[in-house]
Length: 278
Length: 325
Image (tube, rainbow over all chains, first blue to last red; front, side, top):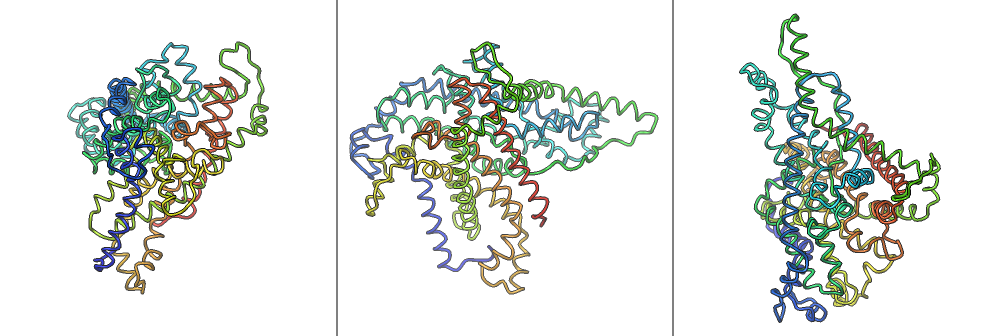
């Protein structure tokens, strides 16, 4: 916890961490290795990580053609990007009002925020599904976005953050003649950027992963998000073609992993911040 | 985790403080009323879009959920009957629902202690030295950002009874093969193993943040007071100072584990013989496969109540016990 480790302690720490890292990354290693193997080797080769015959081309070709993979990844990007933009655009002004303005009814809005924090989307999916069905919204990209445009968590997180922005900044902007709306976008947004980027990462990871709502509201392959697309792939894939299945998981897992590797600090800090404050 | 239960959004570790008043300028009394009115109007305008969404996406669905939960409504069946509280009493004798409730509890009971303790151990190991800190942090965090449905498929291969690498390794050291996902006694622990694998990295970064917040001087002070070994410094300083973090990590893990769905939907679909039926899977089946909307709504209300109770317990403990800051 403090001070320098003795050389044996240092080596022991490294050895233990490397062992644990090996265990944690073991599924990733086999995912990649299996995606390169022909089916016969998957059944027979056991624990060898490097294939004797490479079938990467066949496996990945199946992965991207058996389902419209490019379309599915694009759906994921469109849905996640739309969700996060709507969430921030709606949440930031409300959070500012709750943090810095005084108005009658504030307590009611805050109570609704708390209610929203307690009710997960899974629980109210039945009424939301009924509403989407009667509005003929099932099997559209809009239905994947609409229920998530409200994030009470974003309101909650931004409000905590905005409260720490000095009032003088806001008073100065007001005396410069800025409207409250202009204050939100020109003063609060730049100052709340750490909270907004942390929330954005949290939101994208959560919605890129979500299966529950797409499973309910989408039945067409070409409208699937990545998790649902993978389920369709599994359904289309009779038998145990693990090579192709692993190739599909590589393709579908890769975007977020690359994003993470490119922005590790931002990711971990973002998730910690939303975790600790959320 | 993020995975997770897709949404971590529902966790609220912190109760809102009693209303602290927002700032105002210090206008003269005469002008004050005018400014107040202006401020209130601006606040309502800024909150209006959110209020509309809250009504449409939160308040009305909640009201509809509670109303539906008191009926025997079925999708596509025109007439329905009001059952009142009988709808909930029926759940008490619904063997499938009770099994699903129990399975969820077992899953949570397996995932929570293991992933919290392992997360803490990883954080302490990483904090203990300086070599490769960022590297290990990222490696252990990888499962958090990997798509759950995809990684579940990978685990299905790893756990395959005949050619899965896990069983091959067991064979290598002379242990018998295990039918991980196909036997009703093992399927919950097997799913829990996947859950633990995904939760550990997230818990680790939360503990790392908690550890970073501990004042270094406390360790020096503890050492002066005779806590010579790292072990005794852990128990005199680290563990008590981590109290609030630990409680938070436990809560977030429990809540995410209660919402387990992706792995069940991908790998077992509640089987074999309903032995991995969990709450969200049961609600999904009732509501969207069997179209028993009334029953599914009652189950969903119970689900919300369970989540609220868990948060209430956490808040109570937080108030009573862990005040070190």
